[in-house]
Image (cartoon, one colour):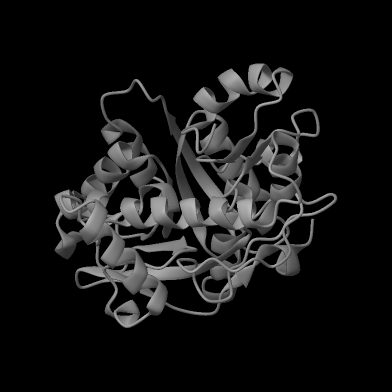
Length: 300
């Protein structure tokens, strides 16, 4: 069961899959439970977990805005609580303060009311922990509110250009996020051999799909990661795959950013924990700073 999408749907089946000894590799959710749980050895995550991502934003603010007042919009589930909790823990003891929090339910029609409430906090940073639909709404609400201009940090889940474009690129200039794989729309990768392999394959096998779409690049990156895991299996069995994904040693995957590798081992079931900050400028994201390995920066 490769890349089951979402925390609730993945959690709904992992008990059954574990009992049936069915590998559930590289689930498409960054909940930290996939790496901390020791009762489901057949399930493992892939993308940097939400706590690790929160640490990257915390480090950025400590370096650049060490007395920031932060307002947080978050989804009221494991996803939102994971990232918010990780952020609070990472800034504890610093001059950074979370001064307002507003949550929303996935069944809510919009987050307009929550954004209005957060604006009254006069925070100078907005941490936006949302899925794409609500990410677009939050960005649009921020753009409309001319009396509040916080630094807008949007989590990786809602950072796709497909989320930003409906708002209008002119309204999302300077928004900050973090990533771990190469953006196919970024010209700096135009001559990258792995990017060329990806784009050529997309043109050949999925001619109706847009290679510049980040979701397509994500799919290629995680599929390539599974390929790497299959390559290092000691035996071509379910158990072989289960053990392989939990014993990866600095495995390089072409579509991952330089400095980002897959590593797992005893006591470490988080394949990816390095991210790099990016800022939206013009019509695309631009990387800045150095990759942050949250294992080295913060430890366990």
